[in-house]
Image (cartoon, rainbow, N blue to C red; front, side, top):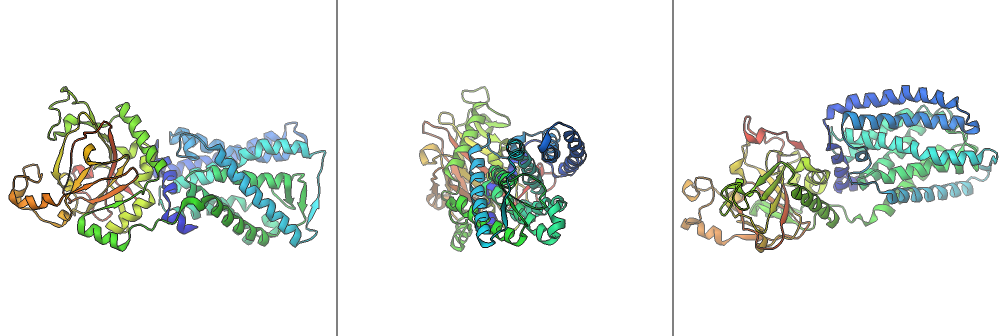
Length: 540
């Protein structure tokens, strides 16, 4: 399961990237966490006492405990909105709306597994369960549980699997680290539950940790919190109304009561249920992404470029394109206009016809979570580590844009190497080009000259702007070896910064969209005082 998280952690990257909106600096999570804890401890104690004074009859204690936990949610929402200045929904999903059906799926599946586990326990341990309905109290508890338990579970999920995991990702975006660390934190407050004193802190801590790790795993594998919210809610509703046990933190008139909690059996059924849940929900995700093969890496070293076909799923590609189309329609700044490129055939000025046609939507990483997610996604990061080394960073100062090649006003891009724009200790960077639609010769796809990243060129073979001269005989053989990089939506091109490449204009009827980011190894720093050092890197 962890290997799946590590090698196929695009959903995890999207979930982490949802926190990049608003004020996302890692240090803000320190005061933020402190404020959440204060609100939970002191606000929870106040609300607990206040709720006990209400005329709630048999559900007063149950309501008071749940109300105190709701102060955890108040703290998280307040910090998210006021300190981080981002929408509370980003704690749950990077999407534009919450998937209630996904939440119901998680609840229904985990509820069925709990029911089957209880049936098996009753058969294995005859007499452990007793039929203990209290019909004078049970109807009121049904109403209270259905109203409060989903909110209580939502509070814990957005706190521990939402805010905490997104905060931990500021330290290290490795899904296993985030899952394990957040589960350890989740375990600590649960050690105050009454069953710990009754059955022992060691085995109960393992149970709490395993449950938290299960919820963290399905969250990171799904890239959203709905499954965990549903499963957590089903778990607590099952305990409150169906099958409870002695010394439970919630003393409820459940239909059945176990005379003892068997923590070992509970742990074993939890682990088995977690595996079944994972396989049932994620079995269609496909085989683990193992990155480039050794042969592909050798081909990149030889040619200077490599295409990962279909790396981006169709729905994700459509999301990126939809955002790009929206931003282009709004001319959402910052942008680069065709007139500003000074490429051959470009309008002479901004006031010339077509001069204000957008050529690039700049700062793509900061524009939307879908770009942030894919710019740092595990399928991309794993391949970059194979090409650049174990520690890789995204350079926000270069590329970091969506190319928007308009069919009416689109200029040519002559033969050049990207390194001419950049200043790093070593000319060893890789750009990643996401095709958000078909890329063909007729709409201006990239052209590359294989192997030129390994070549040195005398000054007379280049013009003053470092473009490859087409009027030099020595360059003719190279130009004859050019390759058109035709791509389908979802294909991803990796190419070296020293590779000569060019592009024609768009002769089709549709705008061509491509998202492009550039990466370097962590030990290949930008030179101080240069444009390359003007913006902070994003470590992968």
